[in-house]
Length: 25
Image (cartoon, rainbow, N blue to C red):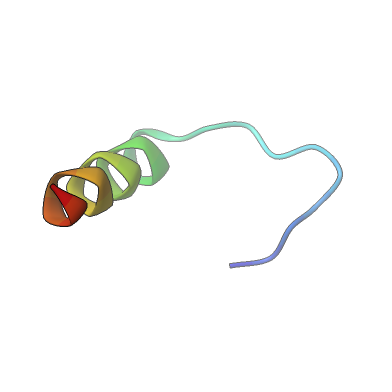
């Protein structure tokens, strides 16, 4: 994933974040 100065959150990004958070629990 590239870290750009401004990157709007997309549904897929949010889904991936939620999935990763659930995995860490």
